[in-house]
Image 1 (cartoon, rainbow, N blue to C red):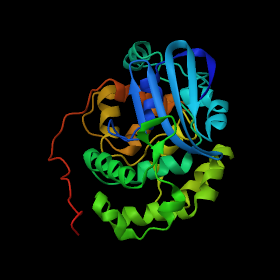
Image 2 (cartoon, helix red, strand yellow; image 1 turned 90 degrees about the vertical axis):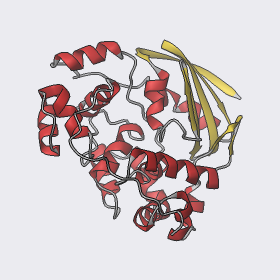
Image 3 (tube, helix red, strand yellow; image 1 turned 90 degrees about the horizontal axis):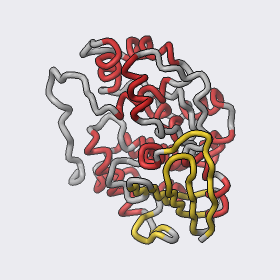
Image 4 (cartoon, one colour; image 1 turned 45 degrees about the vertical axis):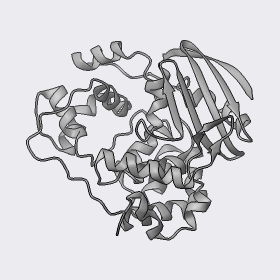
Length: 298
């Protein structure tokens, strides 16, 4: 185990910041507590686990495994200490209130692009429960004990995932369309991993060039793996309604209307959406919920 102390220019709320990686509370690779966050991951130097602890502007990072050196080098960005609020000026009273309520909610940058893509693709066009359950089943089937924290599992190895057939995903509740998108990403892992070091616009173009990857997936991935505070998941079923309800009192919305309301915060639109989600307020519902599907026996 190796460690380092991180001094951040901004306060850090670890569960709200590092927890943005999680595919739900049952994600076998991430665990958070009141002032802790533990992440099992795969780095360019091998698997590793990093544990952050503390609050305010002083954070301790400890790491295990072959990837521990890489993780400690990147620890400030991973916990949000590299977040930059330049240009962020709350203009709406609700955004101002939420920014004061959650002063430690930081935008993180993990650099683990492919790993995050696999998490997010499982959630395409399905209910939140289906997304969380599907990813959890996949990790339980393919993951390995995390260095230093055997109670956690490493995310699936993209090299192993690339060798699977689409029907191998069915027992995890993932149908052919999502499975084939996961396989494309795993088989292009080298090119996609390079986006972590590319200029932002170039990175977006490369991610979106993969069939099955669009602005919804890229928006979520860029908001954590690439550390883009402006990343918005365009195409989400609920987020436009939430944004318009909280910022304009309109219970129903569209992507265009959402982006119009967020335009004054360009550069930090993703940050604003995260703050609004933290409020727990949802737009009124006027229709049936999207039904969950069961494909594990097919």
